[in-house]
Length: 283
Length: 264
Image (cartoon, rainbow over all chains, first blue to last red):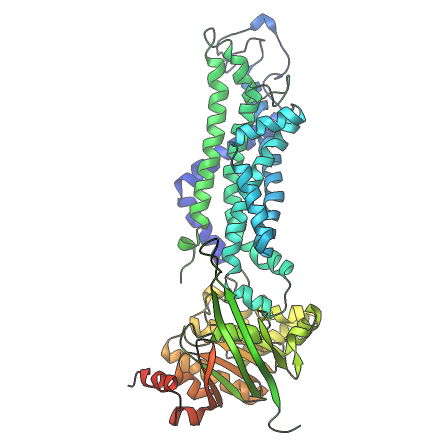
């Protein structure tokens, strides 16, 4: 685990500003979601109409919303939703996208053409429109939103994987492996996949951020998480009608979304710099 | 068994590549990388293939290794046409012929330890126990002049010449009868070239392997090979013993090649 290479990697990681900042912001998000599983200052679902629109106080750090719920608690609980959407949709994207990308680069020929043209076809639709279309067809709800967002990230991973894998297939150690008698499947698993994993991980963090954003948009439109599940997107849409009365209602979930998306993007950028072979490998 | 037993034979071997279509209506252009090539290689000797870059040497090597299916013709190893075999039979044959590549930086997976790099052919082609596997890797590593402790290292910890030794060890591990070496020293420094070539010769003396050495460098071929073919644009323009070709070249192309060698 802790050989020379890894220690060197850690040293560079600590010095990398956007990796550290992005990583801390992402950790904060994960920490928030984890804590909220067991504890939030107030019940994020229970309404208390007597204290509607109360301003920030020591009791309610960020005040309360139009139903008298503690905003801080709702934001904390909303992070669960964002994280699970990110996890599920990115997993769907990676499992299917990476497999068909690897299939395309292993088989080449018409298989590759077919897969890539299908991906182009999906790319032709704006991602969020595609998600809206899918949710409109298969029905609204958290799970469906996750699946829809996952489906639109499949072509992203497929393209990336195929491109990176093609570059690996051209290496001489693949030829050496073939002349050792290894089959295409084993070469893919043992040589190609480990060498493109870093690229996939970087893309996954960026795709995670996009998924959070897309879920917020879907929830804003009422197609994502249904009440009373706390969700940042729905907080925004509920705040819309209160924007003149209590504009802070829209600002808090907005900040939460911005922090998590920014954090994940910075983390992705940092990771990309760190795993870039041109910087990492010294000859 | 006679001394002049043929181990590899190519019969009217051809490999054509079709270039991507430039226009919808024109026929795609065809490159004749290897065009009607015939030769026989005698067991235990070194066979050189010489030519400029683009003369079809590497394609020929890949056809002999069964990595590319030729457009026409056959490659016989121990009188068996390797392209008539099923995938499984071919895999079993692979124990007998292995390959060393040109670029020692590209031919070793940077993420694998030396142990698993060298053991790769062994893992596929022979069922060996873990202890056997390790000891055979160490033996082979020692025979190419590297240390036992090197098996736990990664490729980036070695120099070019050492990496090429590792690549040779990988080719040797299954005790093959034939090793195809595609430009094995052209990526190395001149001083290291000599070491690796000497190693190849020593290994031939101790293991009795047959080399197919592919090179654009005539000095290398002259140093190692017994028989030589000269290739140009996919065809053999001259063949014969190395001595004969280097002292008394008959074909114009061979003469220009020989004249192009820088003299010190």
